[in-house]
Amino acid sequence: MYDLIIKNVRIIDGTSAPWFRGWLAVQGDTIARVGTGKPEQAKEVVDGGDNYLSPGFIDIHSHSDTSLPSYPGAESRILQGITTEIGGDCGLSVAPVSQDPERKRQLRDYMGEMDYSWGTIGEYLDRIEELSVSVNFGTAVGHGTIRLAAMGFENRKASEAEMDTMKGLLRQALSDGAFSMSSGLIYPPGCYADMDELAELCKELIPYGAFYETHMRDEGEKVVEAVQEALEIARRSGVPLQIAHHKVIRKSVWQVHCKTTIALVDQARRQGLDVKLDQYPYRASATTLDSNAPLWAFEGGVEALLARLQNPETRKQINFEANESHKGRWGDIYIPYVASEKNQWTVGKSITEIAAIRGVDPADACFDLIVEERCRVGEVNYGMCEEDIEYIMKQPYTMIGSDGNAVSMEYPGLPHPRWFGTFPRVISRYCRERKLFPLETAVFKMTGLPANRLGLSDRGLIREGMKADLVLFDFGEIEDTPTYQDPKRPCRGIKRVYVNGVLTAIEGTHTGARAGQVLRKGKI
Image (cartoon, rainbow, N blue to C red; front, side, top):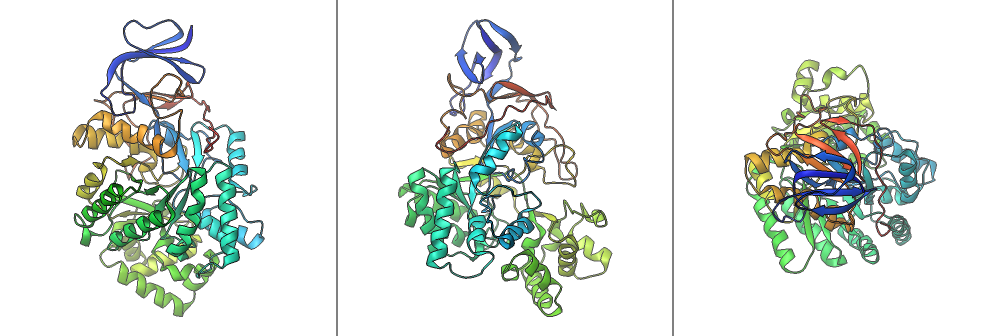
């Protein structure tokens, strides 16, 4: 007798094959049987109500390594159907941690307040395992974090000895089970690396079967050159390439540059490069507000940036460069979160609005806030157009990644709704309403395709012997109810979520179960 049978469902298996009516049996944490016709017996039988049953959604791009220790229930993940996620993206992971006190302080200043009592990726994953979390979790190792541990926020070429140190840290992370090396080439200190450094480090990925994932050096007017750089790094090193949250964020090149970047990816794939993309389905991006400062201002780390912002001469230059690069854009940048109580009034307002209230220049409004909050302030930036989003999403090698965090519904501020609604939004808006692709293709982009990229042999498909990560949803009802104004809401239409065979959400409510497993590349 099985532990659980879910009957009367339309099964979408995650391969993009057409759905079929049937039933599924679970024994322990594993799919024991997939059948049609009359179901067998089980201790518990759930009638699926002729709804769709799919593999649990896999979020290939998140930053939950920074939030899971504080929010192990991961409601923002579970309540949108995510059962597996990968953190450490955009070149910024919470390990490795240098034991040098100054470097450790720089990491804390930049990444946020955590105890950083671990040193390696392996030790950090052990910590997550001890916590028991609701979602299956694995991680990339960030190139920026590795560079910080080896040479701080130095804006120069790495020495031979520093390259050896970085290679050693990377090999350790890969041995510990990191799935990839991520880079964030708009963020310091990763932005200070050249193509030679990145290609040389990427060669270390090959023996581990890992891939290179990049937040490219530019996603605006120079996005084509950024794609060319990413492809060249892949060619030189011979590693698979994942272009993170591919988008075009400048109006001046909307509906133009994405056609070129996709053509470049298509050409590279024809030439034998394993290139894939991920994407979140929103017009607005989100990051930290300090990303509006010129990169040279970060040399030396957060404290050095804050000192430059408070120096009248350097501040004048920073303001000039920021205003030049932000012409017509300050009004598109909104504040979703600040750390202090005194500046809570800024949450939900644009930089232009804040500047008007304070009676200052927009650059001053931005950088004053950064100084007052000591960089603990975020931004949401309305920079993309729907036509580009749809063009990128339709590509057969584009998968879905939220670029969000695992948090609770009580998380402070107004985080980007992608934290809470990414995956249902793809189904409701782009599949059901816009009809970009069939439902089976949408589910494949969220399950089988990311599982294939990650090399997960036991998740991402409905098959006998696979882990019982499952989502039961109503296709006609499913909807991303989280909005920019009210993001912390469960999505509609998700009836049940199972993680490793354990019921973890039912009708938009978390059950409290914490059955997630820590995933380590090569040790699954």
